[in-house]
Image 1: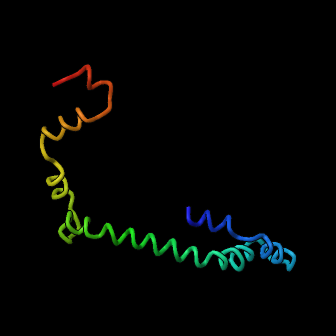
Image 2 (image 1 turned 180 degrees about the vertical axis):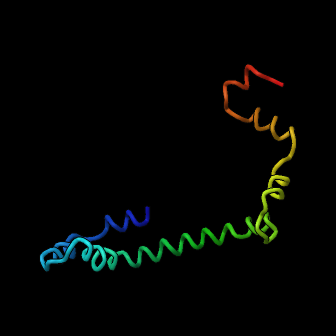
Image 3 (image 1 turned 120 degrees about the vertical axis):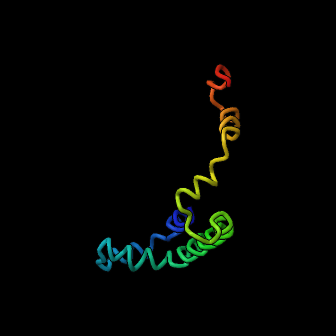
Amino acid sequence: MILLAGFSAIPGTPLEAALVDGASPREMLHYVTLSLLRAIILIALLLRTMDALKMFDVVFALTGGDRPTAPDFFQWASTGPGSARAAWWASPSPWRWCCSW
């Protein structure tokens, strides 16, 4: 969304000037459009990096700082039939009203 807003904010005069000067579409993209979007790309990259760093502590706490292996993860994720029943009753499915355990 940030880059789309940046694309829509680019004025048409630099693109027209590049077209008059004989620039190819690839050169217009590289030298004009990306040059004008450099600050917006930097802001978008900074925001995405901040979002990734916000999630680091959650992932670190869940995995213990190590790569999760499949048996460990499924052992942690399986909580038994109680969670299955809770998920069944919490689902918005019409089938849960006619079928019960």
